[in-house]
Image (cartoon, rainbow, N blue to C red; front, side, top):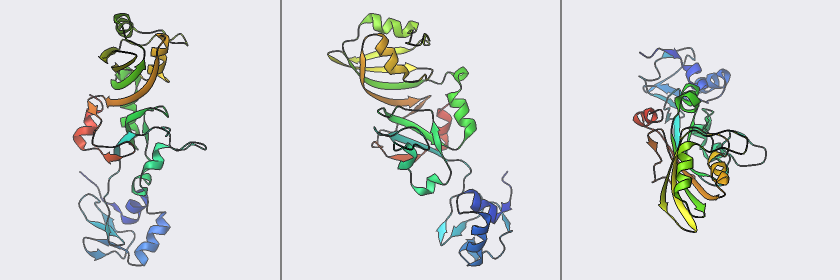
Length: 239
């Protein structure tokens, strides 16, 4: 059951400025509820049951946002970086006001599925190592893949820092001088897939994440494009 909140608090929480800024908007007659101009900034309404307009534009109220992005190469998975462009830079202002952050990371030169949200609890469920949420990647590898490589992925690979990875799955899609593979892992160590192949004396030359949990990348999204997730899709992240 939704509860009523002050209109100035509602609008302030979703990025229309401070309470003082919102009061000024109301004073100028720029805020209306269900077609009626708001005169009292302390008026309490249910943001899910009423139609709120600011400057004649309907306000879509929600506490959390969940965005699926097809991350392009050259952007870092961060909210702020003094040198590089970040994935947040790709978002329109209407999403930036929610202060979303990447749920997990993709390397600067890695593309594909990236989730951005301001829901810390969801991020914890997705990223907590104990939950073993699977992630699937498509990769192009310099060199041929043999049965021993597949076995080592299954048994776990010792990385350069002495950490042994969990059992993972390596499927060969195309074998040759440049091989194409699909990798499924249940953890997310720094540069993990690149380091796993490095341990096999092979080099990753292209890497794309195609799923997290049971959620698959919407292939209609071109690199750099994004959209909000449906409720059913949000639940797939932790399955």
